[in-house]
Image (cartoon, rainbow, N blue to C red; front, side, top):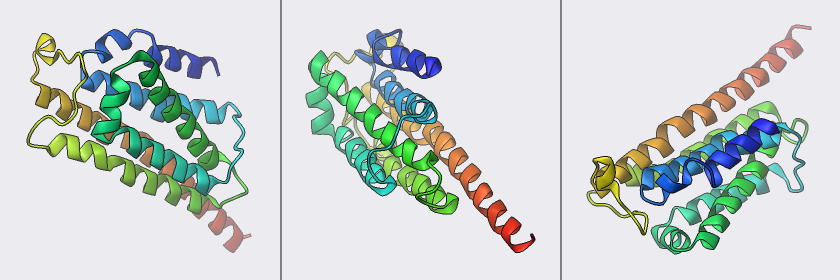
Length: 192
């Protein structure tokens, strides 16, 4: 729980926030830290799931896609309170999702692996769009990519790569672990 708190502090208001106000890639790093580190740690620390795993999946995917829609992102990024709403809702939805992914009993390990894989694929879409867009479609209101030696398009492309590659390492790693456990249970049942 302490590690999750430290990740939340860095992602939310700590060292990353001043840079995240000027660089879209740093803002996406906040999302990555919340979704791929803080939320799984909170789920593993015992955060209880008040909804079904599939409802947690749908809520996470819906919240994620909503906040990565350029109009919603721009609305949230204009004010500290709406940006906080964005970050808190992403973290809460991701925690519900990971709670369902880690909770044994309701779904088999194989079903939970599939749940994690499908969430990874769906949440990849905004990152892929950002990476391959011919022009910058997302930028922070106080964008200052030039201060970091980047154009707004390069900043967006880095953000897209961050959303796509490191996030997938976490998602696919967890899905692989669940899949391997599922296969192991089947082998133990077949060979008592």
